[in-house]
Image (cartoon, rainbow, N blue to C red; front, side, top):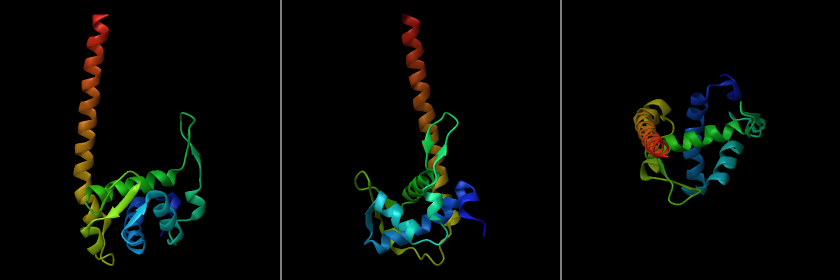
Length: 145
């Protein structure tokens, strides 16, 4: 298997998703995001700690931690596929589906992405509609000035 840090982000997420479920189970089914992230990394042989701490600079000059994106997108995919919920800000909790899925046969593409991808597309469409609505409103405002 290739090194985690050189995998495409989608492949990284596919590795992280079952680790999130497994770790939440060990933590009693509920955890705060920061604790969960640390536990996922410390209990995984595939995810190198050095990579998690790696800081990169974006094109516009802002520093970021690439693993945070991977982790947060994995969380969002699991929410869309109804394996976890966010009962309150910063807290992640397993659903019944997350508690009972057999991780030995877990397949990120079949079990998660097949359900999450249409929801991502729907979310994207809603965001575009919202942006276009604001653009139209703003253009009317400036046209009246």
